Image 1 (cartoon, rainbow, N blue to C red):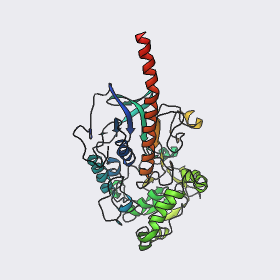
Image 2 (cartoon, helix red, strand yellow):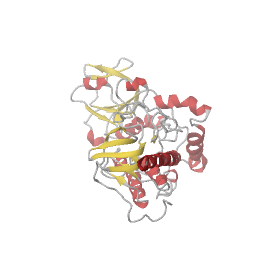
Image 3 (cartoon, one colour):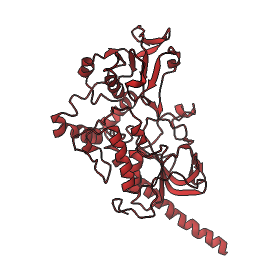
Image 4 (spheres, rainbow, N blue to C red):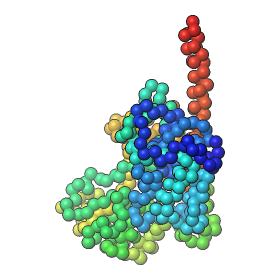
Length: 404
């Protein structure tokens, strides 16, 4: 089936409830963001019966829940998913709400079978199938694609609980705008892209300190003329998409660093932080007398702390032996699952799309997820074909036994 064709009247779109226990699909996709929708687009070509589960009330709500001033780092010409361009001027930088609305429109245009409000609590094996347990009941599937980014559970250091009770604390996941904070100074803990952008957002109304090591920065303006002409494409579609992959020596060399330390600042430049009078400090290492303690021995008397300290993968609901022993021993599932470019050898029929550096540096980016989705959808179809071929001799043997 051509996914760009007009959907049939039997297509299921945005289901919010279902019979639950008796359901079975060839494939269940967990996650209805850009990764899950991209997988769904390509699965429609296979003829397999599939369902996309998403915990949010609406497609795109993960984007809607980000901070108010957030804009994408990539221009609109790189933000379209397969089969549908992004409806904005090519060199503009969409807002987070525009991205959310685009995803919702994408799911509707291709009649993708998305069930919203369906939070998955457990994924396990059940005979030859996978069992997906949701609040509304259990679903069986021959194959499962976990289509989620590596950023699900906010990570906050344990010493955060030692901060004085009157200090307002927010994680970047929960930050929306300056009105959430008290009057007074703000310490941003974590100097990556989120930390730098939130620091600028707050600098108009608060005195701001930005704690953490420098991560470097892209040495050109992403909205500048050179970027429009060639630099953006060179970085995004060549370096991030084709050079820094698990198939190249350079990609394999830098992947551990990227996975553990994050990437360079993309939009914000150090001179912008200086111009906004944002003070850079060493990293925060603990708490002293209820106040943030820095690595240089200073304590900061601030009214607010915003934790831009990253995320855990949040895969504790996956009850399968696919995590490295260091994570399995703690029964946390917070680490990266063991996979080969998204295919899980230890669990045939299980796949991941959307993880950080799954195949390339671009794998978790909007412009890069489509390639991984197409490859994984092909792997799903091939697995289904092998299973069907293997089932035929078994069926004949069973029929022969019954007739005998």
